[in-house]
Length: 450
Length: 124
Image (cartoon, rainbow over the protein chains, first blue to last red):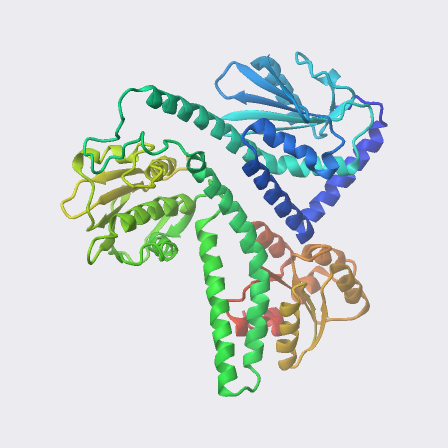
C-alpha cells in the first residue's frame, strides 16, 4: 500500500525500515526494556487517574513526542454487533459517530495488510475522518473487540521518526489498557443497572434466607468501584511484578556472588556469621522472586506443572493470612504433573485458602486439607476445612457475583474462581459437609486451551 | 587462559573476575558491548563470557560481529552466554551458534565456573 502525502515516498519508506531495524535492536537491550517499563507504569497511572476511556486517551497527549498530534480516532467494533463506534478525541472534547460494519472491516483489513503505519484519507472508503494529510494508524483484536487507533496532526507535514517510534511503542502497550477500560465500561453499565434496581426497590434486599449469614445490602454501600476493578488490577499487578522480577534478579545475583566471594576470605567467627546471614537473606529474596515466576506467568499459556508444588507455593503466599490454619496436602503420587495455566489455577486455590482462613478465625485447631485424586479422566482436588462451613442451601449461590458473608467482602472472589476454572475447562463446586466447608475442583486430563 | 567477561552488573562482573582469577585465569572485564567488541578484535582471548542484556548492544550482536574474525567453530568454543532471561528463543539462537548458555543465578556455582574455565571439553 502506498502513502498519500506530499512527502517523498522513498525517503519515508527508507526511514521507516531503518527505524524498525533500530527498534528491533533496541528491543533486545535493556534501555528499551526499562523505557517500556516506564511507559507501562505511566499508562497504569493514567488508568488509575481517569474514569472513562476518553479521559484515559486524552492523557496520551501529555507524552512529549505525541504533543504535536491534534486528534485521536478510536474505532471500536464489539464483535457480534452490526455497527462500530467511532470516537474522535481532542484534548478537551470528543465526538461519537457510528459506522457500518462493512466500512469498518474494509478499513481494518487495509491497515492490517499495510506494513507501513502511515495513511491518507484517500485510502479509506466509506468513512470520512475529516483529517488533513497523513495519519498513523494501528489495528488490533481483543477478545471481544476489534479496534483501530489513529493519531493525526491535521497538517501536511510528515511524521518525525520520534513520533513514529513513540506511536509504535504506545500502541504495542495500549491494547490491554483499552481492553480493561472497555470491560470496565461493560461492568459499570451492568452494575449501575443492578444498583439502580436495588435502590428503587422498596424492600431491604438480603442475599439469603439466613439473616446471620446474609448481609443487608442497603446498609452497606452496594458497589465500590474499586472492588469491581480488583481483578483487572491483579492481572496488571502481575505484569508489573514480572517487570520487577526481571529488574531485580540480576542485581541480587551480583550480591550473591560478591557475598560468596567474601566467604572465601579469612574472617573471624562473628564476621563469618554475618556474611552467612547476608547470604541467607539473599537466597530468600531469590526464592521469593522464583515463586512469583510460577504464579505470574503470561496469561493464556498452558504448561506442565507439578500440582503439589503449585499448592505449596500458594500456601507460602497465604502464609501471613492463614497462619492459624494447619495445612496438609494428601496425594498418593508424589509428583503429579498436569498441563494447565498455573496463574489461574493458583488464583483459584489462593481464593479458597484465603476464604477458609477468614472463616476459621474463631475455630480452635483449625485445619485445611487438600486431597488430590488422579482419576482416569480428571484430577480431583478437594479442599476442606473444619470451620463453620457453608449451609447446603447456600452451596450454589456462593459463586454468584456479590454474594458474601463477610463484613467487608466484595463477593467477587469465588465468582472470579468460577470464571477462571471455566477457562481451564474444569469445574468447581461447593459441597455440603458436616465438618466444615468443602470445595471440589475438577480438572480434565484432555486439556485443550479454549 | 585469557578470559574476557562482558557483564554490565558490576558486582557480577567483578566477582566473576576474582573467582576466575583464583582458578588461575587472566581476566579482563567490560561493561559495554562496543568496547568489548574492540577488545575482542585487538586482543586474543581463549574464552569470552558474555551477558545478553547489555546497555548498548546485545550479546548476540557481539557474537554476530565476531564472525568477521572467528570461524563458527571458534565462536562455539570461545563464547559462553550468561543470561537471566533464558526464553526459548534465546536458547534456540544460542544453539545455532553452538554456544553454552548459563542461567543467572547459577544453580551450581562450581560447575558454572568450571565451564567458564574449561569450556566445552570439560565440566559439562
